[in-house]
Image (cartoon, rainbow, N blue to C red; front, side, top):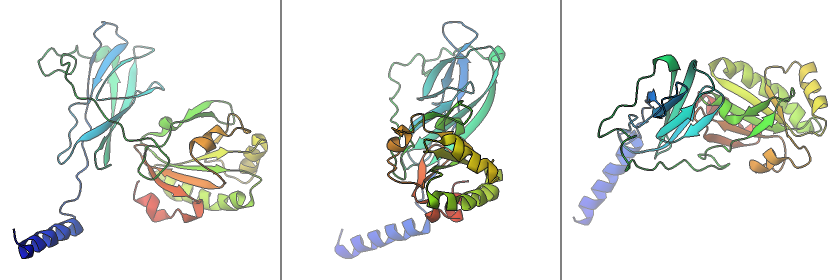
Length: 275
C-alpha cells in the first residue's frame, strides 16, 4: 500500500471514529436460574453465559442476590436462607467499559432442574475464566466495596446500591467548606434523586452524633448518612485515597467510578450522563 492510500485509510478511520460509526455497543445482560445439584430447595445455580456482546467481550459479571449478599462470575451457585421469592440483579461489563443491568424476581418454589446438555456450564470443565474490572479509586475503576455503620449502627455496603447512581461524599462538620457544600449537595439530591441518584455521605468526625444532628437540624434528611467505624483510623477514607474533605465520587449503576474530586467540580451534566 503506497503512502497516499495509507493516508486515506487513516483519514477514513479517524472520520469513522469521530462520527461514532465505530462506537462501542453495550453488552446485553441475561441469565438463567436452575436448581442446585445438591437437591436443596434453597440452592440454585445462576448462569449468565447467555449474556452477549455484539462487538467485544464481556469481562465482568456482578450479582446482587436479593438476600443481602453479592457475588461475581459467569456462573454462580448460591444458597438462600429461606425458600421464598427474591429480586436478583446482574450487571455485565464489556472490555470497553460499557455495562448493562438486568433485574428479575425468582421464586425458589418454581426453579427448574439443571439442564444436562453438552453445552451446559455445569457440565463443561472448560468454561472460560472471567476477568474483573480492576478495583481502584480512579475514573473507570470499580469502586472499592465498604461495609460501615449508619447513625443507627446498621451496616451499609456500597453494593447495596447497585442499580442506582451513587454520589459518595466524605465530609466533616468541623470543615467550613464541607458545611458550605451541603446546600449544593441537597440541590443535586432534589434534582436527580427521583431519577435514581442516591447521596451517601460519610461522616469523618469523632463526634458523628453532632454531625448527624447538624444534618437533621438543617433539614438534610434525604441523604444516606454513614460514619467511619473507627474515626481515628478513618479506614474508608484511606481505602478511597481521600486526603482532605470534602471529597466526592460519582459511581454509576454498575459500581464504576465516573467522577473523583471536589464536589464543587461535579456538574449536573456529568450526573445526567449516567442516570
